[in-house]
Length: 502
Image 1: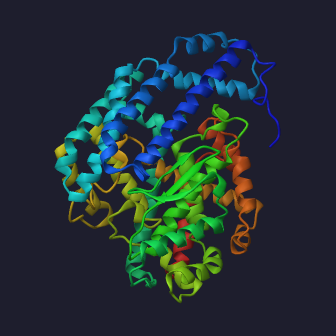
Image 2: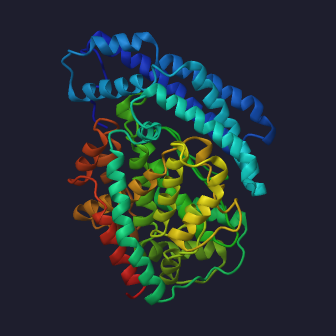
Image 3: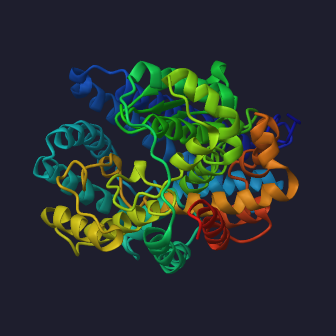
């Protein structure tokens, strides 16, 4: 990678050099926190939570103290009138935003929130296993109150929900996301109805049971096919698949359903997309905003691109079908697998198992409940019934229990106002897909298993800039246009019209 002005700071103003040293120390602690979280989800024995929650709380306290150290404010003030390169100016912008969003939040609140979140994950797992929302409700209410308290310390002039949303979606107005939701409601509802009424039947050929060991071997083969760098990552299982890491160590997880082996392949491909972003960040900028991912929504664009615009394409299955047959003992052709992995399941209850179209209604209903709960329009005990009502309204299906309803997802254990980013990521993935196909013959590359040019294209336009650009600027840098749902709508109509013979 070419040398940049972050490789040496010999010509930078002293406050900038000192600020960068301070920031790197903070980033390294945050990354250590990520490894501790990974261990909690993947390796930690069940009885380890009392100590682990204290460890996470202590790490949060130390990092908060570093982030809000008065010297950070002094360095930022000293740089107000400094003549900085574009990259250094972007670093200062990001560090100022981070500092200003943390400096007024009391340290004791940060510790309490971190400990509560850690304990909440185990509480959620138990409640889900028992399908008992009442067991999780007090914890959820406490988390909501703590997050609202934090948001009010950050900005008491706006809705706490908006402040929470801005944590994971910097610079992208919530109104932009709401406009995207409106477009998807308008365009996808009639498309799904048309598929239900007039669409051809697609195959569902996996009618046996497939052991976890076989599925794990298949998922390992999936990562090898995509070109996952084993020297900088690993695959494990977790109750809710996730990726955590840096440009030097990006770990992925998956989970298995004995009756749905391709679900594990898609989950693994999704998390690979996240890892590709982390591993594509600039190594020379590690610990600085130039070596960090832009936002949750941009991160989701990478996972949804690899999952949907690579992993759910005909060319992918034309090359990968023999690998599936080898690991699962099946004898299915590529077209059957392609159609199977793209079937629409309007009656599906689970977001992470949803198809490309109905997926967004899972997101919309969650976002609506999320916001109503945070803003106090819905009491915690009302959530299960409200969830079921919205599932019936948007998807025509009512969950039979809490485990497949409002307890299905881990996300409320860690925060609020983030569900929108899944749809933002899908929409941006389709926009990136349209842009990359202007430059590369993606289908031919995927069919031949040549993924390096695709990674390099994403690297140049999405990964390597880090946080140099604000979110709307990064979208335009990558695609040449502002964020729009138009490409996703066009892609969905063309793809599913062809699949279902509409």
